[in-house]
Image (tube, rainbow, N blue to C red; front, side, top):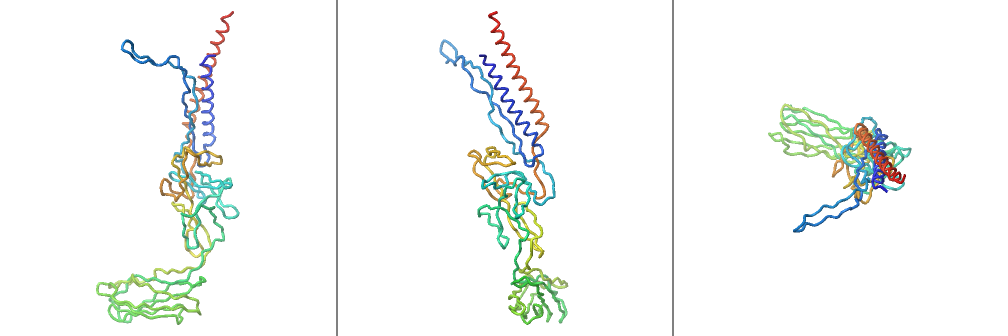
Length: 402
């Protein structure tokens, strides 16, 4: 049989595969996070008609004479180029800007995806469209995330609470005017909290006694758990001496002992900016909304006006992402040639950053895919002509007997 007949058949098979891959790319032109593929061809073994001959003193060398036996598909590679961004304004939609994959768990198997179209199920677990659990790290009660812990299903139950914390320190800052009149008084107040989250009023009063010298009185809700002190400033406005008022614990009110921090006070002339700037207590609060930072940290906003980390999304990178195996549902599985998943925080290593409220669209280029369709079609037609021509030659050979 003619070698060209089988070469044409191999060409038909190879170009049919190219048509299949191109058709799949076009079909997924609007699939979130889809990555297009392309086919690479290579020739098959060649039949040697004449081996190469070595050169001698009396005759030159000869080249080998070989006839190719067709074409085969060498590989199908995936193009992991970044897809376009589509703004959705949905807080659970996330897009990776750069390299990396979301880590998901499906039936106990760890898979990877670029599709960030997530939502919450009835148990508050962050899931993909097919129900796979998004993986990451949960924060503890203080909002600390330990990325060295094992991955777990990210959960955001609506009944998440931020516990109350008693105030143990209050900070006052600003300037007390050194040119104030004797007897001038400045009163400042700040809300402080007991262990159950109850709100109390801390009042601090500064009374000028002489140039650069002030008496300080402090109380909580006007109770007896109050204290007195004083502060003096140098001529350059810096603190000379300070005696802090002691606010003892008051069981009747429920407050803890509170330490005053006046280290940031100054004593310059013609400027009065004294203010209660901070305290370390907080009331209890329930989760109201959340947002995702560029590093994947999920920041919850609570009813007490505070924000606290409640978890962090994990990203994975691979030494050879082309070695990943497509498993359907826009997910990939690691293989022996992809390397192990390097799981970590977004924006570190070879992992990109996260954008909330957006999705990464397919990176399929329709103009290139339609061109590939034409190339595959013409290649298929040309190889079919090889078979037709080979058949005509065989027919001529059969007709020689007539």
